[in-house]
Length: 162
Image 1 (tube, one colour):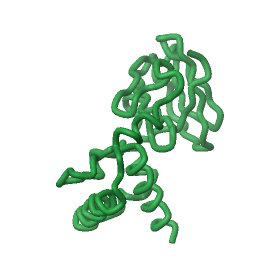
Image 2: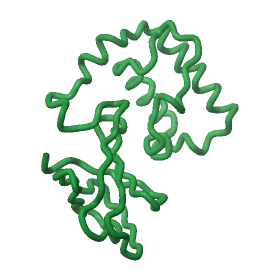
Image 3: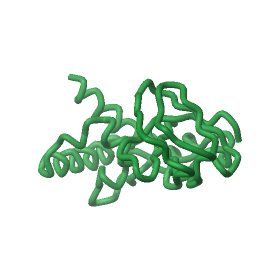
Image 4: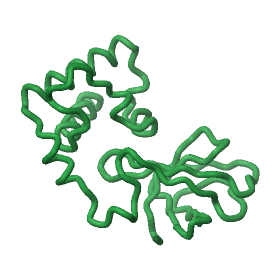
């Protein structure tokens, strides 16, 4: 039931944000979602055949419900676009000083002057990394995920200082 709800939420989001147009022949959920969102939604547990079936279902859903991609993009635009990465962009910078992981509410000061704060309760502890490169990407529902070079996990973050 939870997976069905997740699939319906993703379908609604794709319709609203206009990730794929209604007349496209080949929808690809792997291209439409970030790796972090794909993993967070549990879709990474599907087989290749199941992902293809999901792609076909999304394409049919969009055609049947007449999604208007242009209207969705306009409605989904952030109020202050320069403060956050666009849906298809990401921010790359370096953490100032040492990085030892995160533990719920951890703040990350970047060399570009931005400060991002962890919004989930995940915990990751590791040895000190000095000045690692980070990439912050937009996820679903105005969420953002930070990945640290050399670390396999991602952490959900929000920007607290421009």
